[in-house]
Amino acid sequence: MIAVLKPNTTEKQLESLTAWLKAQNLDVHISKGHFQTVIGLIGDVAKVDADLLESLEMVESVKRISEPFKSANRKFHPDDTVVDLGSTSVGGSAFAIMAGPCSIESEEQLTDIAEKVKASGATVLRGGAFKPRTSPYDFQGLKNEGIELLLKAKKATGLPVVTEIMSPSHLDMFNDVDILQVGARNMQNFELLKELGKTKKPILLKRGLSATIKEFLMSAEYIMAGGNTNVILCERGIRSYDTYTRNVLDLSAVPVLYELTHLPVIVDPSHATGVARLVRPMALAAAACGAHGLMIEVHNDPINALCDGAQSLTPEQFDRVVKDVKKVIEVTR
Image (cartoon, rainbow, N blue to C red; front, top):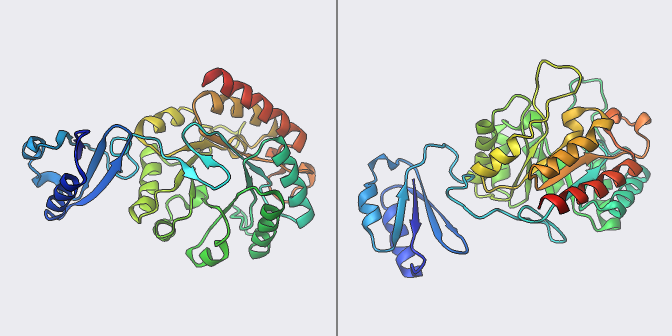
């Protein structure tokens, strides 16, 4: 249930109403927009007298909602969430471009790629230190050493960094990482999500391989229920029966999510297609359909990459993609 307050509501009235609602064993989520304040009621709202609530002087309207995701719901929070990264941001009118290697292999490799993607317009450096792989015999990443190399590249370029976290026990290693990524396989690792909810770090949450949009948003809800509202959603393709692409990039999810949630949504065309030549057209389509950003894998030697070389762009290819994406943004927004 949500209650929309009248524009002239005072802080004293808001405090009084909040105290009354909490006395009824309800959690209260307050969202203050530019033009109105919205109160979200979480808990057993069946016993709440909606007519009585709406009759109060400061209340403009009361609505019951059926979606189980409350904190992530746009009805609770009509204004877009913008995740601040210091030198840049994700959400709102900003368009984020996250780029870098799927896996960090060496200091030379990462530094070279970081400098080149920044020159092309990347706003965030991505790099995998911990790599969840289908086969236990595949390269699993440099782990803590990889994080140290990522932070060196951050210092050298000034770019904020994003990398994947796989376990709550690793949190201390990620103190200086700007965005913690939850991979598709961990989208429903609820114990991990709960721990990330206790942090204030921006969280990049990737959609699971077979997750519905509702399940995707409920995973975001786990993080936000813990108090962390800095969540970025990432559409990275879902599994299907077709084998011509690695996954099916569900671009329809972008406008649907925009209707349902205030959280920013970015698109990962690299993992979605698994084929480097398909990254550019899907990146352009993502920009056209309203995504708040892109996550693209870039490698300076894709043929010899230790992980996902087939879907990685060269720095030169990435530069072209960024230029074309900017043209699409100019035309469509």
